[in-house]
Length: 76
Image 1 (cartoon, rainbow, N blue to C red):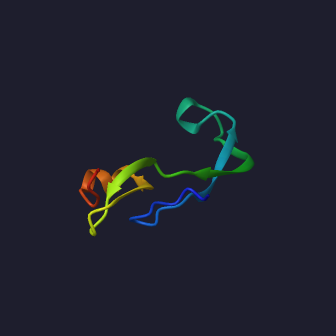
Image 2: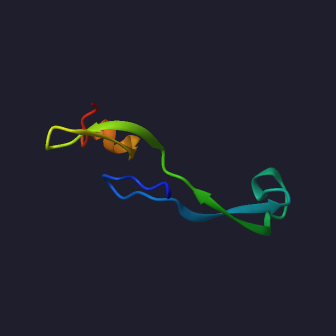
């Protein structure tokens, strides 16, 4: 099952780790240079919680902490 927020639709996004080498100009060097890119995933902070549904029932689902803090869901 994919880790996607059931309320906001937040999902993992792609990004890069950028490796730099050299001494910065601020420290007296000639500046840093990019030597390598590595792809990575930025994962949202999801919690597996029991949510109260509008029809009175409850269900466990992945919900982002941002949605919980904003009050978009009610814990059961």
